[in-house]
Image (tube, rainbow, N blue to C red; front, top):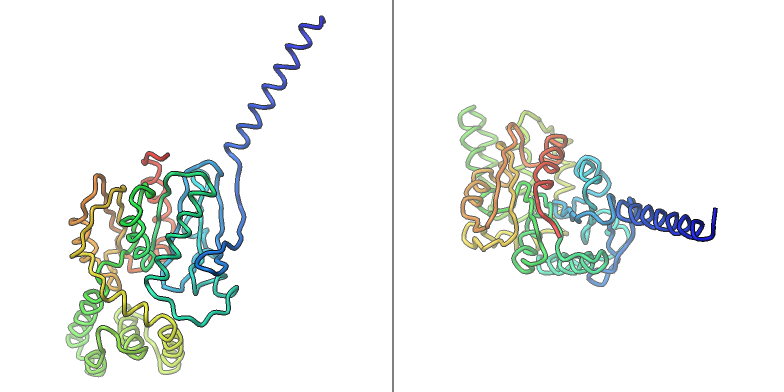
Length: 324
């Protein structure tokens, strides 16, 4: 074997190794978590998936109901085709544990956090756009990002979207009163009539929750009701200010032009984010590309009530997209 042949072999091996390394880098798997300084505090993010695939940011519900701890029920199916990021928002999950902050979050503060995280993701992973998948309260942040940074969002999947909180709760209470009148449950009717909407306190929330649970076939005895009341009291003390601000949002009137592809998932038994409002909102969306999907016999918590169906559909609709 002559010198020239040896050089060619060495070059060929070098090119092969470089190509193999490039392939490995392109398909490099990520499974990590850490804290990012967002809004002046350490906020928790977890990342799972393939490094150079399109980025999916999941915005959890609540507020205060972090989803990163059970991400396998929500986004595991996406991890072979996307880089999936879960974020424990201010006041939730590991972000809450990391920061001893008693400040009551506002809608503006949460929106600011979301914008800062969006820019962090784009800069860190060298992206022009990301995909948003948002559930319940998280859709409020997702709509804000889509409206204020339209060039940075390629696709928005709104699951059980918060369209008009005030109207949803009024519709729910009217439906419950009709139901219990028909079944001649005067105690329920009397208590439901005492509720203030918008809620004035945690008691309003607890009463409506009790009778909605009864409507769904789950009886709540006095002991359990007392436990729920304590939970709602703690929750309302922290989130009541933000909740009152959400009452002022009516997306049936705003109807902005959403430049991104917009997808809505709704449960046909959702009274928390009233499903009829979701359908009405979808019809009014001004978007170049929009789709809506119904989950039969499912209420508000699609990620928990219909996890497998939701993941299958998420993967299907997202794989149809064109991403940078």
